[in-house]
Image (cartoon, rainbow, N blue to C red):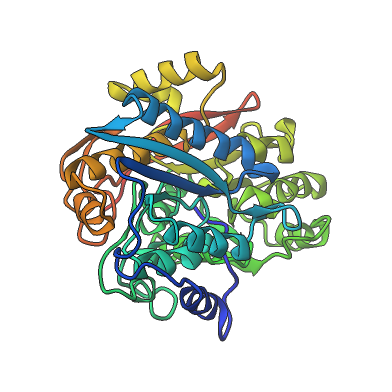
Length: 410
């Protein structure tokens, strides 16, 4: 999923380039040797603000995977450090902190795997720094397509994240070029004839909003409006009055909980917008329901998410869910299983490498095929994406996210 940077004449590309130049380093995975027999895995996630409920369960999932391995891969002892890429000033991920984390990782010779980021905008900052030094990056949550896939995304994507020419960035979740079409297809199944699309003006939010707009138009769903919101505004009643005037069947929001998604729902209800609300995985969390108010969200808010909700997992996934609940005495949020899966992939890459070298670990990850994971068997493709393509469709009921069905589109 994403909590992203704004587009502009310089925007993400300039920031990523500056961060790359600041990376310093070990040069293509070579340089100072780490402690013999010690392999460090770090994660970079927002560990403060309203994301914390979600990201803490990701960290819990990572810890659980490492503990289940006995903290070892062969003769190597695994050390894990969860790093925060948020700042108190922003209350969410911060590009400056993310760049600092990436530089810190590449300059620590013990670090062979970087699990992150949670937000796709943060990945845009970290990926080129890590790539220059050959450091493996595995995301449990990024969904912006341009991070990996050639296409009509932001200028230079995905090549700008691969200055070394090698693939170092991988993710274990399906991207928005799958989620957007699923959202439009589900809306059509629900009988939606018209939609008003809003977004938070960030790369992830605006990006998926644009994909949903295109897919709705393909399906004959009338797009009544397409607006970016001021994510720091205290309320949106005038905007919702405008939306009400177009009388759409659905309001779609491309964005994240932390950019006022809940307030949009509150103000829809306040001004009498009759439409349903739909959002992507950026609002697939308890914090969204709390921000919107359960009474406002119940039976009105529809949310898509990559894969299967934790409590609906089967097979190995069910074992993960039961173990997590027993161990941590709480429900895992949606991305917890992906934190666990990312850690399992990291351990497998280290096992395949068989030595404490970044290039060997990177190559070990790139070669993963038919991985027997929590969501079934899957492989990494040539872009570093998972071969899994399905999304879950969920509705808010009784103040909780309730699974409805799985969907995928060709």
